[in-house]
Image (cartoon, rainbow, N blue to C red):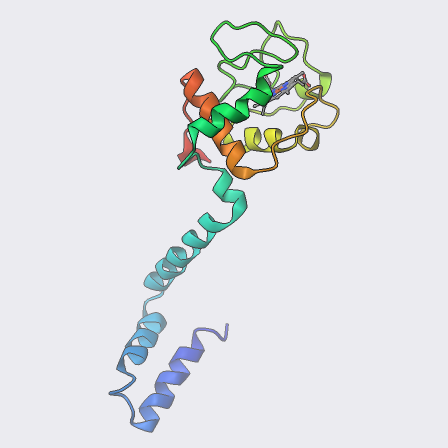
Length: 175
Ligand code: HEC
């Protein structure tokens, strides 16, 4: 409630001092804020979005700048349990072709854990990221015995690699 008043008060104070010429920029900015709320909101959004991009959590939720060579390296850790090729066999884990965008435990011919079946998850960027970081935290008592990739860039890269290898795309505007 008080915030919009402060610039107005400072404008009045400046006017009272008769020091309008030197501080003209501040004065006109303050009165613009007081009179037209819409540009103020824009300013807030503009300053908010770069800050959001810098936060680690949201940095993960974009494949921008992914290093596919590192993704391939990281994927070796998945390879002992998963195949990626279309029509590839299920091994210890299910074949991962087409997993991006699919509901969790979506393949009828793999014996998933009840927990993963009941999770109701869909494998989008956010859920895959959380799963690869720590499968047990996302779905307790699931059967993927994988400690997780703690490094956000490794996760981004391996997801980008899987997407590339399976021809999948993410609709990132929906995230
Ligand atoms: C030790 C074996 C093992 C490793 C290593 C492993 N997984 Fe898995 N993965 C599994 C098993 C088993 C399941 C099924 C889990 C269940 O049913 O609870 C699974 C499930 C999944 C699913 C869900 C599939 C579906 O159809 O819902 C994804 C996605 C996945 N793994 C990705 C990965 C990725 C990416 C890596 C490497 C970073 C990885 N996994 C490493 C064994 C493994």
